[in-house]
Image 1 (cartoon, helix red, strand yellow):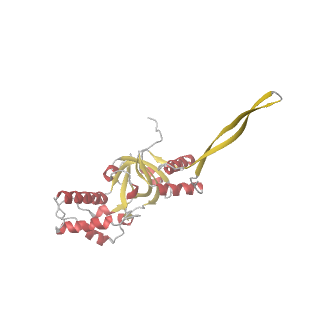
Image 2 (cartoon, rainbow, N blue to C red):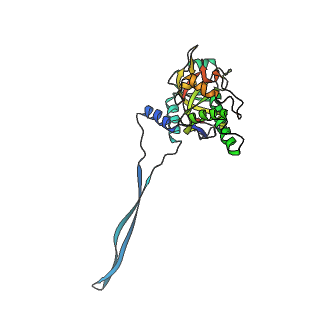
Image 3 (cartoon, rainbow, N blue to C red):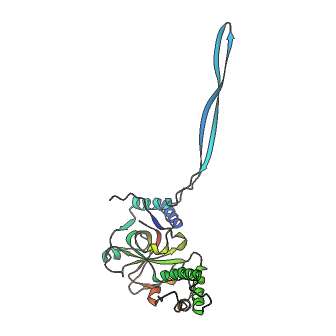
Length: 274
């Protein structure tokens, strides 16, 4: 089937798309206000008699009417423009499938479009579930907001909710990689997510730019990704332990859920789409 070039988006960072596009083109055109005009011609008809000869005529006049309107760019405009520019310049690596050789060729600063399985990190899935179940449970009366373990859980939820545009960690497992060891990881700005968080766990295309290629033996703390919580690890673990006794959860966060090891590759994500 032919790709029509029009996509459905699960995530879109318009600002990052505009920044990358401006860097490629050395600046961007700013939308302006356009005017349209319509001119008509009217006249005054009349006649006179000169020397017994009748003369008729029309005194012409012109008029113009102008309408001013603003040009509004579609929400996805910068994405399509950026992707088109990357393809035209032949600087976009499209990864329909992946293997160890392709993985080893990736370099920092490279633009990639990956087809693969997207998964919200266990940490963020856990926190999303906690928030949703707490809200549901208190609403129908199955959770006692005065219970001590629940209070501890609420403290964590309140901390995270108060961080505004907190980053959400997501993994991308390329098709054909052969092992889940080969994965991209990224931090998404939650305000740019266009679907329910659980709906991100599916197969998509991801357009982004390689930020960090982890060297052998290197690891990255998910709490240190852009937009993350930025608490000392032990302090965060203390908050997370507050969930352990909550009656609405059966999943605890493991230390391995808080970091990514080599051969992981960090990307800055522009869009998740299909």
